Structure formats: structure tokens, C-alpha cells
Length: 310
Image 1 (cartoon, one colour):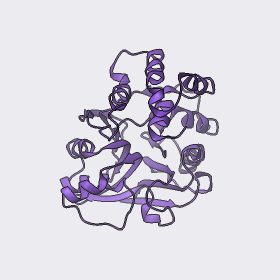
Image 2 (spheres, rainbow, N blue to C red):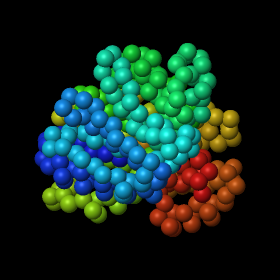
Image 3 (cartoon, rainbow, N blue to C red):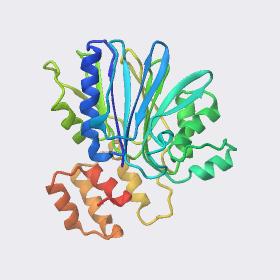
Image 4 (cartoon, one colour):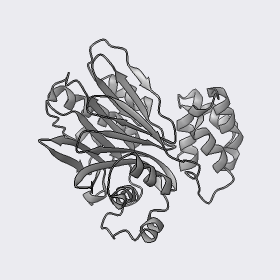
């Protein structure tokens, strides 16, 4: 359970110092989902910069520049590959068609080794399962909706990815892991984090002019691109195999609920579905009620169930 976070300052409304403070607030709030390492990626002077360290978010120093348009961050909870080897931490560097990109991932990929074998991908010293995303994009030789669709449809496990290219396009590949994106139209500002709770906690420490944000909906199976001017474009990938693990007893439920925004299901119905499968994981419906009482959102409860995090 890691955390994606970041910002887009499409109108260059904020100074570098203000954006650095935003990133620090986002990174500190993201510690509830991971403290093993923190990383950031952004473009400066025509070059993609990635800075990461095996330290928690509040200890990370951010130096956003006045002309920084997009900053893509990650807070890591280690599952595979020691964070003490900094190459295992996010974001990861990639290159396609002569252009560089950075990739960050929240979730767990279970078929990375088999994909590396079946596609004859090069061996790497990076031990993190997430790096297979970089290799699959590089295999296609370009970074666009088509190559991201290819990547997403090969993966088995859980994921949401953010990818930043050298032209300040931010791609969000939304699998069944949570993601919250807010847009402040008058300011030209986008802020995002893996959960709304992380984002709301960070906003307590971010000073913004009075301006009501718009929540941008992005569903499982969608790819959203936001360019440097703040314009959005969407595409899709086939997510029907996303939860193809060796646990068929609950896969159909989880995959259907991960795509709940594509249906008319209510939050109450969402919770009913979670209660109906709770026993599969060794919990009772009363446990679900208790989590709701303590402020957990349905998508967080679902994530805890299939990641064994209760």
C-alpha cells in the first residue's frame, strides 16, 4: 500500500516556493500509506529530473522551480526490493522513442517475472515488481495511449500508475487501486493523491486562495492524460483480467466493484457487496460496519481486504 501524489500548475499561478510547500504537505500526508521511501519527478531546463531517497515524506526536501508545471510524487511501503537500494524506489526512469519518462505505481504486480520471460525483456538490477511497467512501455517503443493500454492489459495484480513524460504530459492509468484528483479551474491547479483522506489532510497545510475544487472522476479501466496546459483527454483499456489471481472465489466481486463508477450502484450497495464477501477473507459483516464507523471509505475497505491489510 503506497501513495501516489502530485500537482499540475498549468497556469503557472504559484511560485516555486509555494509548490515546494504543497509537495511537502502531500508527501507528509502520504506517510499513512508508506514511509520507507519518497520520490519525485519533474522536468527542468528540458531534462527529466528524478529525486528519491529511502526516507519518509516529511524528511524529503522539495525544490520546485517557478516554471515547474508538473510534479509527480510517490511514498513507498516496501513489498519487493529493499528500499535501501535506491534503484528499487519510485519513480522509475524510462526511455521510449528518444524521449524520457518517469513511472510511479501503487499496488502489487504478480506476473512481472513471467512477463519478462515471455516478452524477452532484459534483466535488470531493479527488484521492484513495478518496474515491469517501464519495460513494457519501452518494449512498444513509444509512450502514448496505445502503449499504456498494452502495458495495463498484460498485468495481473492491483495497480494505479502515474507516468510523466518529457513534455509535461501526466498520464494516469487507473486500475483497481484508489486515486483522487482535484481541479481548481480558476487557478489552473490540479492536486492528486491515492486517497481523498490523504488529499484532505494535505490541504489542511496548503494555503490556497478561496476556490472550490472540482473532483475529476476516473474509473477503473481508464487512462487520463493531462497536458501542460491542463487539458484532459481519455482512453480505455480492457480491465477484465485485472484481478486474475489464483483466488477465483472473490475475484468477480472485487473486479465488478473496482469498476463501480461505471455502474449506478450506490455506496450502500457497495458496502453490502463487501459484507457479502467478507467471510472469504476471514472477517464478518460487523467488521465492515466497524471500519465504516471509524471513517474508512468503501474503496479503502476493499483494498484492505484483498491486500490483507486489516
